[in-house]
Length: 199
Image (tube, rainbow, N blue to C red):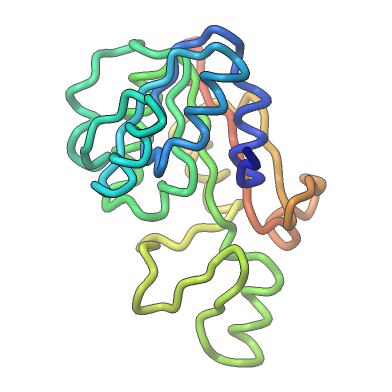
């Protein structure tokens, strides 16, 4: 099974035998890979009923629910990792969702599309319209993205909230790119986060 590039990064960096909650797990592709390749105890939360059915057909434990509402019911530190892949920008309250991720999981993976990528900027500059790209295939009126964020926005957000970045990966197409100019050249970002240790 071929995973989306950001999911491949996450799958390669989850410790074997971990307990994982995949929030917005889609059809369960990542959970299935983690279960089959890393013997992970993976649970999922997904809002779309068809995706829940597809994940359950893979033999996965997935509950239908909304990250904006249902994460509050999970106990503190109940998972080694909480994962939010390509879902942060669709949440109504992404700050609250991130707080829950870092409460529920000892660590959290967050991936999102970078709306400051040079192709996005060029599309707005020259065409004057919201871009439609391979990574952002929906048009402005049918996109699930309601919070358009950039890598620099997310870094500033984490610094304000004193969230520790343990590692970050920046992707252009299917390949990793450097961090120096990631806000301009990366189409996607993946962050591994943890709560900052109290001083």
